[in-house]
Length: 308
Image (cartoon, rainbow, N blue to C red; front, side, top):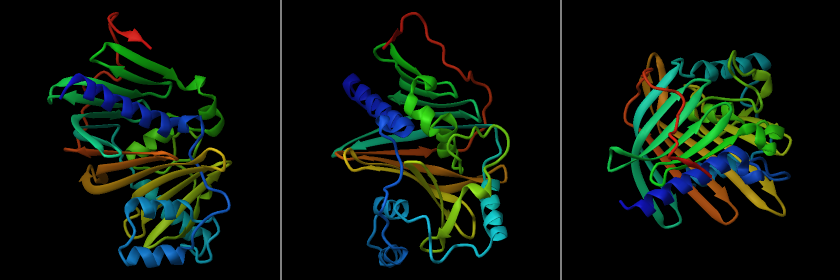
């Protein structure tokens, strides 16, 4: 694999970081005044004619007032959401070798790498060339996002505090952490201690015995799809629509749940970022579920690296 292709991959990962984090300063949220019916979603889904992306769009555009709610009273709603939050992985560290792929249009590339996460502290993705040479690194902390180009000895480091859109809309490290860790989140709330509150969510019937959980926050909209029986989150969706700028959507699918420390964690993550004229797809497959604590949680760079 040549250097140019590696750098292109790292660049598209950077695009994902920026879109997922701050929606390219346009946001990810809810399309106002829209929402195809639950009945339409159910029929097409059962007929097997809707792809995951289409289904995500249908889920994201569901109105927040459902005629047939998933729960009949507040106690049932609270019990279900408590069950969802109780499914969260309790380990403080998650580590694994990964297979990472990116697809833009008809171009696709696959790399191996490492995923290292420490709860409430850091999320790190290392992309490898030839299986053993680190070509790029993405590091998320509560204070900043860092993108490192090992090939050309340069890096980008952006503090969250400098991103006005993220401050005003509550998009931060803890939201990204919830997406990586397969958890519910409330925008703008730092989940260092405690859980989300059931009162934060609207609950309604989905399709195929699924439950839709949702939050609307000003122009932003968030949807989660959870299995009724297991209460596992299998899809997260963020949607934004602007009549002038177009629609922006982030969809995160979770599959292949494996048991670790009495909890189940998705081994396959499929992410799709959709903009008016571009769709970028990512796939991250974990090789195993590790809990290694013996690694530095902050990257330090030598003077040979140039900040850009």
